[in-house]
Image (cartoon, rainbow, N blue to C red; front, side, top):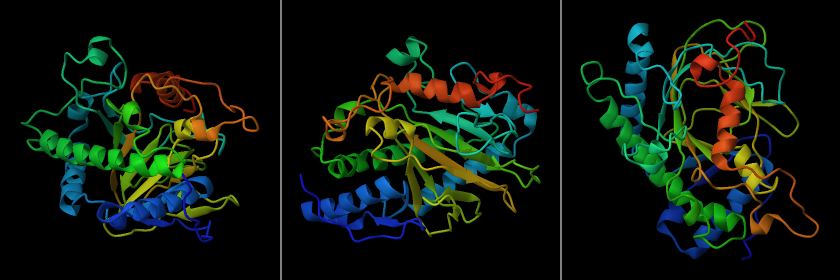
Length: 339
């Protein structure tokens, strides 16, 4: 399946992909959008997504709930603290991205987050089997936050619908049939980090989030007017992710790199401590728990052997979190590491 050529783009800026023609157009529009996506994923790894179909007020309602949750008294948040199933509240200074080879990260990150995973019934096979990152979720009581669960699920379901709608574009960008990924995302292992970056003064080599690559398939984040995210360019300088109205910013993670045998890159990024409180909701869209990272058929051949060890997605995710999160926050890092 041959895609149209893409004009050379600037590798030192974050490009924009407009979904409007794809949602409203023809097969030619899909191919053109996929061709641009392929260039971005091979050369930059980050892009702004516009005309994505999620209403701005739905995003704002969800972010307001994130703000309200993080402004609860600490004892109420600790009632919802993350557990062995890795859902719930993660306090500030709980992460250091030691899995990263981007920077010698040595100080705990200045953010707190609330992790929500895909909502599943209590008798779901993965919940009954005790698999991590599959639930059940912890929800604040309606006495504390009466609209939290309703608003967050409406927003997160919309994000899942959007992410699923991108799968044909990723398939086309990889010279695969448009429905190629459908069987791998029947019960996606998506999770979210609903984050508060406070206005704390960082120590030397300390960040809101330390330089790292994401873990999964793709990440989608509504762009905040409070800046802080920076993306590393090919020549190793940091590009600020500026505000683009009503846009999402999207990037791929390390599982995508494995699955595409190195073809689609997972770009390093970091978040600086902000000048005022910053609230975001990062949506990590991933395949079913048992999908393996064996190279896709268009990413392997006699002259392109596998570059990575094959891993099951859930094992890949658990290893990533275990290395970068403290034991009290759902990982395996020693509590006194980097203290």
